[in-house]
Length: 413
Image 1 (spheres, rainbow, N blue to C red):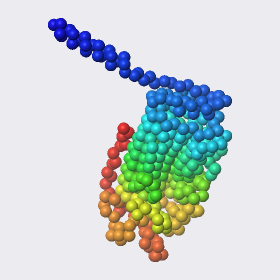
Image 2 (tube, one colour):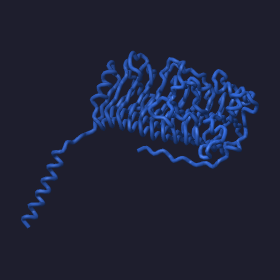
Image 3 (cartoon, rainbow, N blue to C red):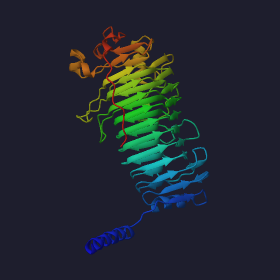
């Protein structure tokens, strides 16, 4: 019995030693209010914060003259609402963005970034980044001198954008590039060149958003020359995409500068795309365009596939397309020419590898159109167009009535 009691005492003593000798890490809330030295105080908080800390911003305007940066994991930066907590970069003198984040498991919540010299909030290489109720805006209206991107996560995983607002970006208001596992929901993009853009990314759900008064509403692009190519598995659904007729104000040379004014959705060079249950209305050029990436540059990566495939467009409401097309842009001017001015709601440029243009696509790669109501459709015959032969455009939907194979919902780890 003595031995048993002795062993019990030893175990209890070991437990106490483990508990009281282990380091205890407490998360801290660091409150930073606007002041004459907001720049230094905010940057200091972002440098000295420990994982698990919250940097609490209060009501007011933080006047900033330089970029802010965060590279500590598991940090929350939180304001008291995007109308009340303002990071103002209108007098910014240096830095390529307002806020730069390069760490994991970061939450940005309830504040606004105004008039950044470059991008508003850029995130690079993050695994776990959440933008919640964030507003980014250039207050002078659409101008080519505005920053390129509003919310700008790239090369990241597990990206959540929820309840955000993006206004006035000269490229894309909400842009996710070269990333994986993405949800963009409940957000508003207006008066940007591209409202919402998913580029060179895998597994994205874009839903319950409003894209209005941009040049193009929602873009799903894949481009050559980037570390991650072959964008795939993107669902765009339950969005309001309306009146995206703002003149294109992208700086000269930007790829998004080729987007025609008055475009609802463009799908370029992606595979496994599902567009459904959207309301797409009042676009002066086209409701939905499905196109290949065309470039005469022989240096384009030989591993890049420039054609869209396995695109499903179903159960959308599409109306009022093509009544004032942007003929300054190639896609619109060519379509206007071959359609004799009768612009469609949905357009596919028909460009495929030469073998497929002659023999046809594999069934699993074909465009599928289903239950989109009384829409007009057009597909170009590229060979007839290049040879100036008749019948360059077909409006027959019957070849595109395959079965819908729903894509899986995105899950963020």
